[in-house]
Amino acid sequence: QQESPLQGRSIVVTAGPTREKIDGVRYISNYSSGKMGFAIAGAAAKRGALVTLITGPVHLETPPGVKRIDVESALEMHAAARTFFQSCHIFIGAAAVADYRPAAPYERKMKKEAEEIEITLVKNPDILAEFSLQKSTKQLAIGFALEMQSDIDNARKKLESKQLDLIAFNFFDRKTSGFEVDTNILTLIERSGKTTELPQLTKHDAAERLLEVIEKQYGSKSPL
Ligand code: C5P
Image 1 (tube, rainbow, N blue to C red):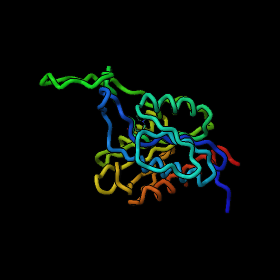
Image 2: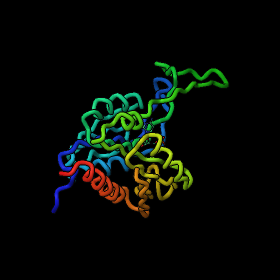
Image 3: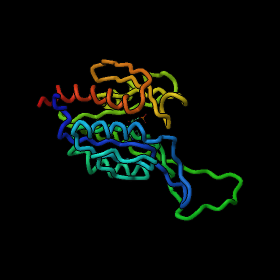
Image 4: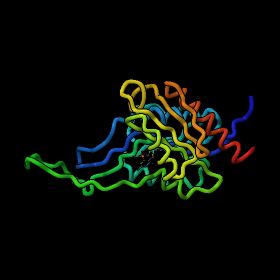
């Protein structure tokens, strides 16, 4: 069997949701389970890559051979990613990072007094875009775009604006694809414009197919 071009390379994967604190006992989050990111991390480790998995709160076992870093908020995920991205070869953003966080979370529990309250939200840093825009010609940045409708053009725009090498357009359907479920329907769009439509697959198989494309991209960038 041929050695994978990912053998011995360092890969950072972000996974899961983030939690954005409202007060001491409450948060804003989303339905991400982390399954896709964990499947990618496991499949990369099987190929001999040195994988660092930075994950929000999930109920999943760490895949064998993967170094796991647990975080809670987008700011914590951002800080963890920062310490690893300079030295990594491939950065894969599979986390569902909350776009906004409460501007001034209460330390204690908020009291139920007013009939109406307002929570001001401020934008979180875009972790993947930050890395991707500063990456060297030897590094790859891969992202996901979860879209409610089959709005593939939106995914293409994200590939462009974040200057990604590949984006996985992730069709959102409550039963078959997207958050929580065990299967996914992905379309892989490469920088060159090459587009690969994958059928409904288990997240494990979708991760394998994604890594095959990444292997090709990385292999041609940095031949062994
Ligand atoms: O722009 P949008 O959130 O749809 O982009 C999704 C991609 O960007 C995913 O790969 C996600 O992990 C990454 N992302 C990020 N930090 C954010 C928002 C998104 O890394 N604050």
